[in-house]
Image (cartoon, rainbow, N blue to C red; front, side):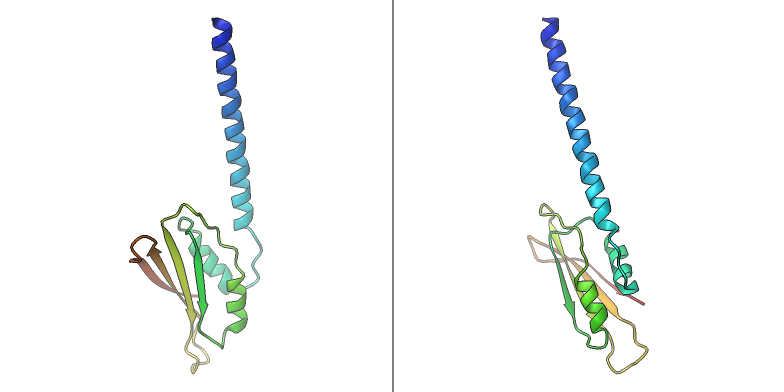
Length: 128
């Protein structure tokens, strides 16, 4: 009887060690995704803002400015962590005043609920 209990405890310990190793490995992968080098300060500012929130199911990026076309291309190449189990998605609209030379690039970020399509949160940030 004691051998049966000891065998059962050994199996549980083995499973816990494997689960711990899997969690450490997953954490390492997420950290590496977050640390990918970004050369544009505008893309870096947007990535830093998005890392404050939990992972969305998908991210949609729309570039509406010709003046910042190079920066918008780099922002669209960003690797943003996503979670298929998430209950919201993010849309990002990038725009600027085309007539003003000193106008910054603005990112309008919307967090939208998947089930209802309702807006959870909307925020505009200056990417200068």
